[in-house]
Amino acid sequence: MRPSQKDFAGFAGRKPGKLFWETCPDRRYRRYRLIVLSVLIAVMIIPRAISLLREVFSVLAESAPKNTHVSEIRDHLLPFDGVRSVHDVHVWQLTRGAPVFTAHVKVDPALLATGRSDLLLEELQDCLTDNFDVAHSTFQIESAEAGECEDAHA
Image (cartoon, rainbow, N blue to C red):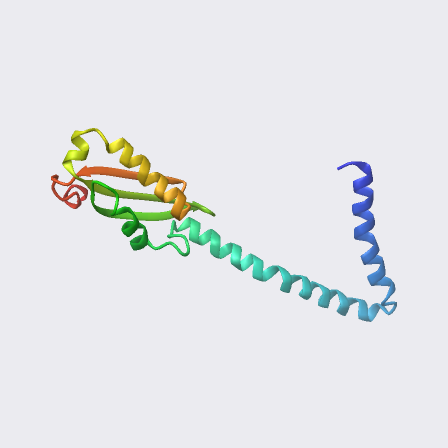
């Protein structure tokens, strides 16, 4: 801070305090005014602190972001050419406003044989970015002929 800014900050802090003390010449009432002023400041701070704590616990618990519906995202990905199913879908947030998405996508074997899986992957990621504001997504592309992947996770 520059000296002029410090002067103004000190002036801005001193004047209300001085005004507070001068409007209450009787010392007995000054204490009550301080209590009332403190309670008013606490009443202004507490609601914001509670909402911040809720948000912190939500991020720490890696819970799904508000207004994020996994079934809606899954249904949005199914119409892509070559996609047969979408499963093991997970959405969570590591920081506020930055949801993370992972899913397993079963595709036609012909899509894998022709080497178009990279194009499909890019289309799926663009879809999430454009429609659901998900900047980071991870897809595991699997052949539809492969067995159930749930067995591999056990």
